[in-house]
Length: 370
Length: 247
Image: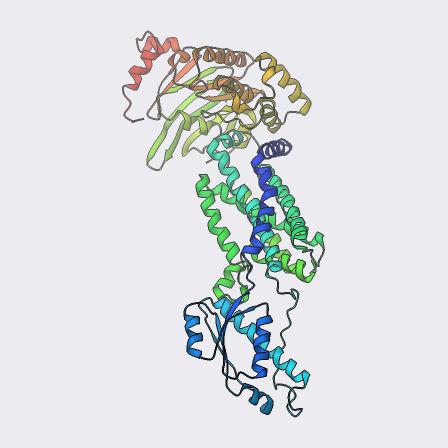
């Protein structure tokens, strides 16, 4: 009954607020334009200090490989390990590769030879990535050697060969895994923060009292608050999909409808959550702080920044209760792997359950009388 | 309950922790009456009014508004009353006609009726040219008149006015009271709190609240006689002298 009039009111207020309309468009654009570059976790430009004790054609060949690699910069080249180590200590170098004397001889005679890698792991991410890139490079090098027949045929190939195959994101472009997550962050801000502030603003203005003294239903009240933010979220997410395509050429392997379905569900979850916090808060400040507290947990444990598999058990337990964990999984799966709703039914059920939980709570916690 | 009695309370009490804001008040308000609810700041007027409007639950005691129980049938009461709070509470970012339409719609009026009555109202208030003005940019006196008009737009049985003329100039107050009389003549019961003792003279009956209790209740002329005072202002000062609560 009153829902129609309440919706009219909410839409007029939102659209009259030019700032808000701008936010819905500019926010996804800004996030997608800036963040993928800044939050790039691809490790590049690993500085290598090289200690060549062999000075043979093969060692020079290996050095050339390193020079040509996009991951490594040959920062210095000496014959003395101590000097290279000094570079490492000065942070000029991230990694020391020491080629032993007799490198070529051993390779040719026995088909195998050790090299030493020393890594600065203060930045553990860079260290670990540097090591695995270097392993990869050495592996390729020895494979190439075997193929060119530079060695006696009795020793054909290394005994163990590790082949790493990067699935779904073959370029290992971090931006591609990041973009679906950034779309989610946009939805958290627009779909979560705006409603969290909305009801509290009415409390601070005193306008809520005038509504509370009318016979308006609690359900209609919450629904009228929910729907506008839901639509803003859907508009924002459409811009997000559009910008991801225009700027990065990223189109989902899966179906757009799958993405929209889950985005719609996720916005409802966050909006319900925001409204529930708004109901329980007396001031805007309080609502914002409580919201920040949860959103930081939601983002940190979503699996967007660090894989959930490598979290300790208790953190995994908390992550299981964050809606973001499921939506990050969904967005990444649909974008990069082409998953369908049939593959993602667990995420769907969990998100539906959370949507119902938060929104029912929001309706119940809206009190028309004290 | 007598059909002519639209508000009735018996020992109505509201406590916040150990503080008793409203202390066993009992009174009746008759249909079509302009009932003045007077008292100093902090005497408990607003708290009592909020209980009658279904915004606040009583701690103890009973009350009926428009025939419904104030503790259990709050939503039923809300269908039958209008309310104008102390703090201006229309939407400043909505236009004049949009505010009217919102509340009329919530109370279940039909679109066509709303449109027709809106034009009538604006004409009567000489407001027609402000139809599309955002409420935020109206002067305070006009805002108050609009808020009152909105609170009785759906023709409620009773309207509760919480210090409706606070901060308004004397001319506008005068006009405001004319509007109140007009509404009372249409059969709407008026329950009004105020600080202004000259306004108390306009009421049919007046109750005086001191420290959460009703210390006096009668028509202005009877009260003046009872307290041997020449004006309501004097009655109020004689009563308020007993107050122990600080503002």
